[in-house]
Length: 293
Image 1 (cartoon, one colour):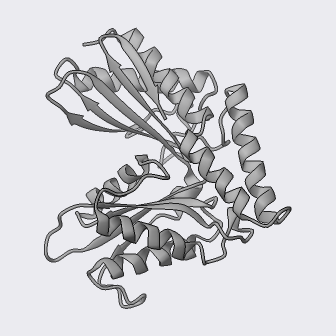
Image 2 (cartoon, helix red, strand yellow; image 1 turned 90 degrees about the vertical axis):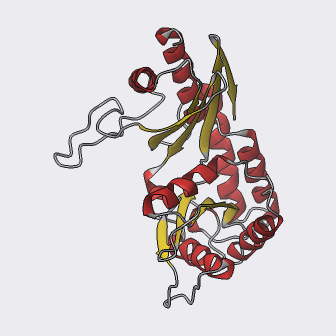
């Protein structure tokens, strides 16, 4: 197992980067969106404020958003690591990052309403582990704000209310319906992560995992790539715009992810990520840490 103190320090830096620096692809997407809006319109001014806010946060190493969100860790680990020790290091890093004000205390007991004060508690942070044969460690972190999480949805198709069947066109109708119902509440423009199939739990897990993709990437499946492009264009005709003020950019991208399912069930799960698309990756091997965004 790696040196616990060194690993904890690397994880604290991972949290700092995710909280205070938007990824380059996200910043580029916001700039493209600002340029697409009429000059001095409410939409353009809102995008400019988003960009200025993100740049100021990065310069001062302060959180991009006051809601630093739920900490979602996806951990791929080699044979030299143990889950228990990784969990301990992640929890220690969350406490230290909170102490340094990279994170707002966000872990609340669901019965008493009491805040733990350090972003740890039962099920907090959330950690998804995957064991691998090759050595090394990859930790992907997403900070998921409460406003965007509240407008996530899960559909069971067929859905007669929106006319969605058990096919890709039905999936399309679910996504458009979810984006329309979100309006400005999810801090638009959103990035839409979609889990298709699976059971209720794994479908939502797939939807969140898809949010680790870059905004401007292309799905390797040509059929899904075409649908993602179509959905992005269609959602941007809804006129929601940044923060619900109206405009031509209501979503920055749609990312589809599949799971096999049982014949009786067909779930379409949608995780909405706000404009402050906060995520970062730690690659750790032989005591050396590298970071990606």
